[in-house]
Image (cartoon, rainbow, N blue to C red; front, top):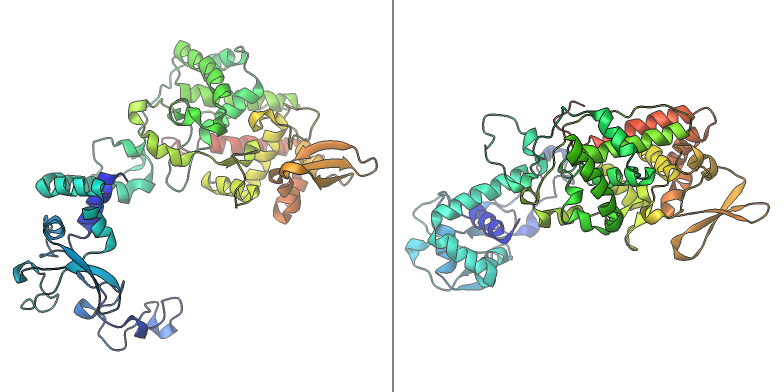
Length: 472
């Protein structure tokens, strides 16, 4: 939320209703999870009062914000801006603000007895709307223009309650607003009638490497977050600010690849978003062929290309990856371990432990590490979609040894010779019992085809994660 939305939501949320702290909080019963079974999940029982209306106890702050707390009006700003305030304690002992002076007619009535007037109050958050210079300017503007305040609140409330529903394409029902809102990350419908095979042929003849194609498609799609349905390959926002400049996207390499794919899109009538994914699919198919398997990665055209005007660049900053275990990259050292960051990326993408395992193994075999590093590339056939990552990770002929920089060396147990290097995001597939079980399945001699098929399925899931217009 921006400053204007923050003021609108704070003021609007406190225009109606009251806070409850009229009593002694120390006598309240246990919280719902700790209360007896007879409390039936309610908890916080109040043995001395009836527990509602004027005797309710929740936050400990007591009172209404406005003169008419059951009416939508501009009373919050009238009360806040037209009075001076001082700190006082509620009956429950919570610090809150109340007017230094106030006429009786401006005081809200008691929730049960309308003949009684009560002192209004403000919280620290409310006082910020008056004392912070930026918030104060917005508050004064809303105070002078109630219609603007109401409209801003309505829009901010809609954003608050729909932010995690994803793009507008997922909305249903007669009340869906016709207006497209930038925070919905709008993406125009993309073309579908172009020659897919022809586009793939152009990509294959473009001179791009397998790792260029696969890494760019992955970087475009990996931003998807199942928590709020944001990010993903649709829209090709990887070519826009801020994504084009993210360290994790290797800006120089990305610009070179996008220049090629952008030309192909323009010449064929396909969207850049589709061409990026097609290039990644082609890279996977080439890697599978190099491993001895002919596969066709499923593809559904129709992705659109977003524009800068459709993109709230500031809101996309929070989607920037700080690490990507799938490409064996860590922006810097964090308190959270690299493997836990990889697990977080996995759950945001909606992937299972099994899918994470097959994708990491395949990405390592194809040589798609960030910056072209060799950590975790346990194969002499880089670019082939083989099971070598798992075969060599679990091979007891080797032992692992920590070295400087948080990396590890795989050494021959007999000769001590260094064979490969790795990070924690590699070795976790051998050290964690569940992940090792998956790794050992793929290390089996007879599971090379299963590995390729499983990789293609997991890859397609990531590429289509944000295709809400395509049936699962």
